[in-house]
Image 1 (cartoon, rainbow, N blue to C red):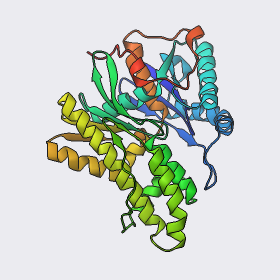
Image 2 (image 1 turned 180 degrees about the vertical axis):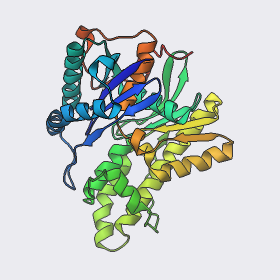
Image 3 (image 1 turned 90 degrees about the vertical axis):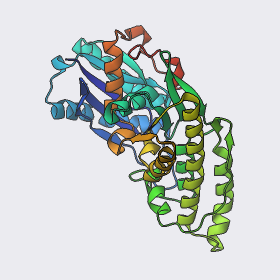
Length: 335
C-alpha cells in the first residue's frame, strides 16, 4: 500500500490530492478568479495560492482521514506553468517533505493529466489529446516516452478561448471556457473563421486576432450575436483538434482517444470527438471537471507511478521550470 500526496499550482488553480493505490482519498481545490475582461497575473496568482495553500492541505488530510505519518511520498508540479505560482507550491511541498521526513518527487504537469485520465477511464493505450489554457498537444506512448505527434505552434486552445472571453467581457466565474460553452449552445449562426492546420500542428493566434478584430464591428452592427461568435469559435477550433487527433490515430493504429486538460471537459468537444471515433470504430475516453481541470490528485497519481518505479527527486534538484515538455520525461512505469 502506497499513499502519495500531490501539490498542484501551475496556473490559477491550487489543489492538493491524496492517492492510495489508485483510490482518490481527497482532492480539494481553490481557484483564483479575476473580474470580467481580465486575465490572471503570475504575482497575484501566487499571492492567492500562498493565502489558501495551508487551508487546502489541512482539508486534504482531514477528508482522507490521514495523518502526515501515513503519507509515503510528497509529489509537486515541477512544470510547465507560471513561474511564481509554481515556486509557491514547490516551496510548500519541499518544506512539508522535510518536516514530515518523506521523499519528494517533481512531476511533469502534462504527465499528471495523462496518468489521471488513464486511471479514471481505464483507457489502455490511447492517443491522448491534451487541451488546456497553457498546452495543446496530441500525444501517444512509445518506448518509455509520451511522444508529441502534433501541437500548437503559438498559443494554446484554452488561451484562445479565454482571451476571446475577455474581448466580449464574459465572466471568469467558474471559468471563461465554461461560460463560452454555455453561450455557444444558444448560437444559431455560423460565422466563418480562419481554419489553420499545418500537417500535425495547429495555430490559434490568427483565429484569435481575426475574431478580436471583427467581433465588435459585427456585434454593434447586429450582424450576429455574441452567442453566434462563441458557437463559431468552438466549432472551428474543435474541428481542428479532431482532425489532428484522427491523423495521429491513423499513424499509430490506435482505437482509443483520451481527452485530458481543462478544455477536455467541454461537452461539445467530447461530442465532436465521439462522432469521429464512432466512424472509425474507436472508443472515446474523457473525465469530468473533477479530474480534467488542474487538481492535486493528478500530481499524486503521476507521483505514485513514479515512486513505485523507484524515482525520487533529491532536495538540490527540486526546482521548478516554466518550460518542461511532455516528451522530456522517461516513463519508467510503463512497458
